Image (cartoon, rainbow, N blue to C red):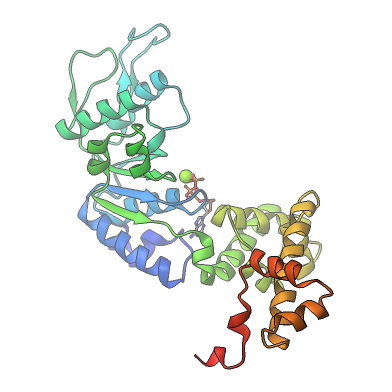
Length: 329
Ligand SMILES: Nc1ncnc2c1ncn2[C@@H]1O[C@H](COP(=O)(O)OP(=O)(O)OP(=O)(O)O)[C@@H](O)[C@H]1O
Ligand SMILES: [Mg+2]
C-alpha cells in the first residue's frame, strides 16, 4: 500500500523540505513517476538529495511496505559488488563459506536503489542488463537463475550521456534505467528553500546536541541566501550543524553564520574573491557616475586610459552601456 493511502497525502515526501517552484514541480513529477512503477533515473550534483528522493519514490509507489534495498555502486571492488547484487552460493570463491543472498533477491517485490550507478563496472552493467530484461538473477557460482521482481531506481551525479560517449556506460542499460529522469536542481537554483532548510537543519542539530535553538537571526538569512553552495543541501546542513555546535545562545546570529561560512584557512581565496568583487562594483559605480565617459572615469581612478580599458575588459564592462538613455532602451 502506498504511503499516501495510509494517512496524509504528503506522507511520502515527509523527509523532503522544499517550497521552491522548482522542487514543487519536481515532486509532482516524482509522484506521478512513483505511481507508474517505471524505472527512474535521478540526476543531480552531490548533496542535492538524490538518496532522499529515492526513498520518497519508494514510499509513494505501490511497492511501499515491500523492501527497499540500496547498493552504492562505487563502494566495493567488482567481485564483491557482484556478490552484493546477485548473491553467491557456498564455495563460489575462496572465502565464500556460506550462501549469501544478493540485493536483487532481498528487494523482491520491492525497490532496488542503485546509487552512483555510473560507477558500476562494465561487466556488471552487462549482467544487470540481462537480469533486468529476463527478470531473473543468478547468484555467483549458481547453475540456475531465480525469478526476480524489482523496481529499479538509479542515481548518478555524472552525466550518463558523457559516460556513454566515453565508453564507460552501456547505452542499452541507460535506456532501461532512464524510463523517467528526475533532475535534482542545485541548491543555488532554488534559494527559496534555504530559510526553510536552515530552520529544519538547526532544529535537527539542536536536538542532537541537546541545545535549545529557537531561530536563525533575520540578519543571518541574507548570508545564507547569497552563499554559493557548491556542496548543495549537504553543505548547508553541515554549515548549520557547525553553527549550532558553536552557538552559545538560542539564536544563530549573522556573526556566527559569517564565521562558519568563511572559516580561517579559506581567507586567501575569500580575499581574492572579495577584491575582484570590490573592483567590479567600484568600476560599475564609476561608469555610472561618469555616464560611461572613460576619460573621466580613468582620471578619477588615477589610471591611464589603456590600463583602464583593460580593467573594464577583465570584468566584461562596456562603457557604452552606461551612456545616458541606455537604461531606457
Ligand atoms: N530537500 C531536503 N530536505 C531535507 N534534507 C535534505 C534535502 N535534500 C537533502 N537533504 C539532506 O542533505 C544530505 C544530502 O542528501 P542526499 O544524501 O540525499 O544527497 P545525494 O544527492 O545523494 O548526494 P551524493 O551525490 O553526494 O550522494 C542528507 O543528509 C539529506 O538528508
Ligand atoms: Mg547519494
